[in-house]
Amino acid sequence: MNNKSTIGFVVIVLIVIIGGLWLFNGNKAVAPTDEVQPIVGNEQQEGTGDSTTGETADQAAAKTFDVTGVPFAFDLKEIRVKQGDRVRIHFTSKEGFHDWVVDEFDARTKQLKVNEEDTIEFIANTTGTFEYYCSVGNHRAMGMVGKLIVE
Image (cartoon, rainbow, N blue to C red; front, side):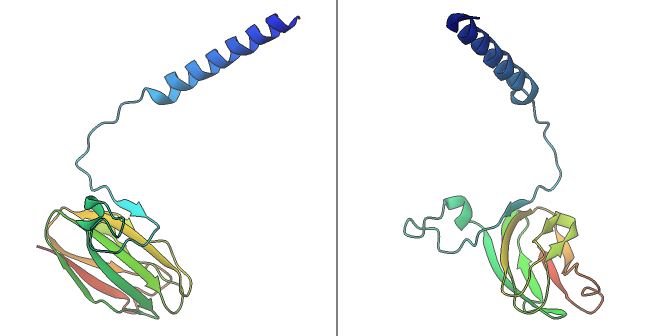
């Protein structure tokens, strides 16, 4: 093959690959759902929502709660929010290996070692009282629980 044939062959192969990827991945529709969709992040987001903090208005609208885990206890035993609130949990494991979970909103931090932290967000779109807990080992049974109250 000469250089023009080789270049032409490469161009055709690239067009086929790109077209295939577009057809396979780029053209999918997403169906709407009524399910709770957690918004998960791994960065600590703090501040008042003004331009000096770098937060967007959406981030500032979240109700933020700092929760610390120690053996068999959370420092915050109750979290109270309004229905429809965006809830941000900034969880720190001070002693031991812990996480923060509330099943009804499919909200869960990573399991964290000592002095690690994780931040998650979710929408509290259902009213009621929900138990949050540590899912590591028997921590929940040992009393590592709290209440999320959505009014």
